[in-house]
Image (cartoon, rainbow over all chains, first blue to last red):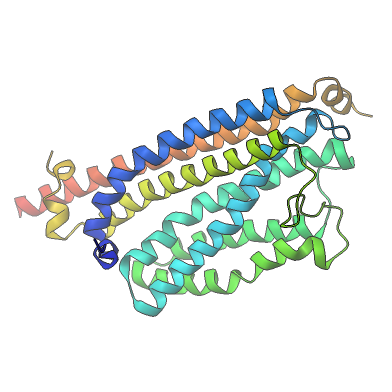
Length: 245
Length: 56
């Protein structure tokens, strides 16, 4: 049976679909967080060089990956909205930005907490750290620009340009540890293999999946409010049970 | 070495938990509360607009 994906690009159908999906994503995220943290703290062994401090990676790495990936997803939605003038794409981009910014903040915060015992400094102007800080500023800039323009469609177009131009920063963050001589370590997990203990890998990938599911749940919940806000004059919103009660 | 440096080396797990996981979970909790609050406000606003429209 073929699925008509275009059907879900309409805010009315997407609103209902998102409402059904949110609890599944939220519950799965909570369960995976619990499992990931259990493995990370009770199963994974102590690192022979970093001691217990390495356990920050079970939140730091997923937060960093999410902050970069969410930016690309946000820019892709913004581009779709700009090119095809689709309402839902722009709404999705707007809904992703705050969650992406929070993940960028968590990445920087936990990185600083790891840096102090390992490097002896909370912060260094290293290429990886600085480009991640720029990513946080790009998220904040996107949100500030969007909220500074009263007309939502004009706000979508203006902020979409910033999102698209800013996406150039994501490969810079990713490759910074290869392009420059940085204090931040390179990738531990490569296609050629890894020296990480299997329990450490499991904990990291499970918390990464949990962060993904959490981000999807929160973004879907936020976009439902944005849809209601923007479509409040339509008949389908007036007929919603939550609006009538 | 400052007092914090000594404390973090003596209590690495507490430092990791309080510093990163508790902070991250608090951030997630605040985000969830804000999203739910925003939905409540939006629904209230729409109901008020509808009521105002019906009165007209």
